[in-house]
Image (cartoon, rainbow, N blue to C red; front, side, top):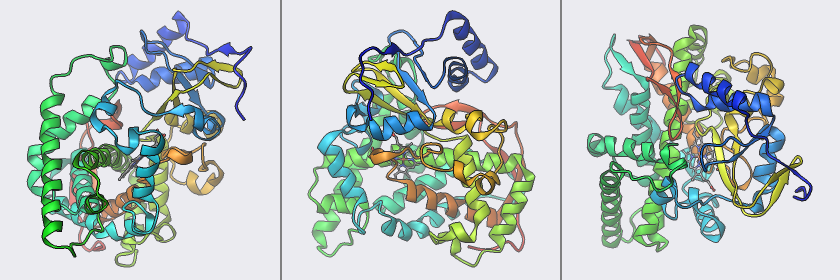
Length: 453
Ligand code: HEM
């Protein structure tokens, strides 16, 4: 039910004093903007409007508010905002499309057992994920220090490219590493929020390099499929070609999969390993559980039952560090939530991070890493209270993919190596996703007699 917008109050805005407290919180937390949002939430309530020049979004926190954005008011919310970097980069990509373009693409990728992101297909990607993880782990040596943020970024990139597009990205990794990171920085929150057309000189060459790669693999696959009418077309790239989509549309979707799928899984895994580095007890329990798994069960979607502690560590990591800490929309009509007016054209964000750390819901230890709460407080891990993958009709289409990839990568790494911290505990950095900075530096120890997946 949507409130009628008449006789409503405006969203509360921070006073100068609250603004100062928010600034102090940010400065005390490595310039983390979420620290400032936390102050606004505590002082202004579940709906508030911070202002940064012309950028004045309404932010909604809590299960009721998130449900309202994602389901009740869904039809009055649009995703696409122009100009903004992610729309420039992704064109008609699923993540930024609205209306029929969105719905057709979503059905194509997710509906039907042969759709590339359907659970049924995703089951078959486990070997690709394991291959990507092993390709990286095989380069490690006993006693070495490595940054697991970089290492999992490589694993996720190799696994994603092979599973979704049936390509081996290894020969392109070094050349395209920097351009990909440049594009992720381009879509991260920045000066464009207050100055939408701020010039950016690093993006065009990076985009050119990555686009050239996409166009190259599209052309090559077209040629292969033309030469061989029986060419397998189970992967997403071949399926797009077979369905007759033009190159530009295919490029937009490939770039979308990279943007939405790679940085997010990288952040989730990097935080998971950061938590394990910090919590020796959890690391030991997870090693014991993984060592006892029957061979290849990590590759099985039903591993949730076989490996409950791995599941708990994964879920708790996504609670504390949801890679997409907010979901953005634009109000397409005058709306109101809980007596607060939201004018048409206002940017609206539902706050995943703040909702998942709200002490009123999660308790006074909401900021602590406690995987056992998955078992002791199962009722809290329910839709809209716990929403790392969003909710409603625009929830994450890649969730089964991310779930399986994460499980396979964790199993591959922990069956071969253990580690201890070799750097300070990371702090949260808000980029395209929230990621651990300055990284997850660990000292690696090769395990003798661990389980081999
Ligand atoms: C741990 C990993 C991931 C997290 C935490 C995550 C999170 C999210 C969230 C919160 C949304 C909803 C955004 C909104 O409401 O505006 C979303 C949407 C989306 N995600 Fe993910 N994601 C992850 C992995 C992936 C992967 C692996 C893929 C692709 C292979 C993917 C593709 C997408 C796409 C295409 C959308 C847009 C769906 C639509 O608008 O219909 N994500 N994701």
